[in-house]
Length: 153
Image (tube, rainbow, N blue to C red; front, side, top):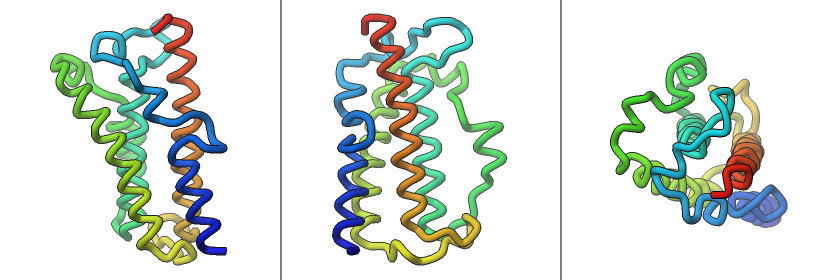
């Protein structure tokens, strides 16, 4: 059973039975194209990747047993600041961090007790954090693809 759960979660990290392979979703984006938006109400691809990285890292901290200030993440760190956009190398670093996070998640799947309660997350079992990660990334990768298709990126 454990192996099946690990395989299903690992597959989901790579877009199998979720939405799309994250590498494929961001392939070909540049700092210039990633900044483009549909309207002021919509997030750019850069925004969405930043958002996924922030939550990915928060989920990892929870899995590690560290306390996470969810309010601060929601109110302060959720989206990139305008200063972050000024240096185009920040986008490349962000993409690297996002893809590295997928590898980190895979390593966690091999190492952690998936049924161990997480005190920082209402004592939910650890596998729940991975399900949230998969759902969260899947949702926002879907948004990213919609932005790319609409803008012909």
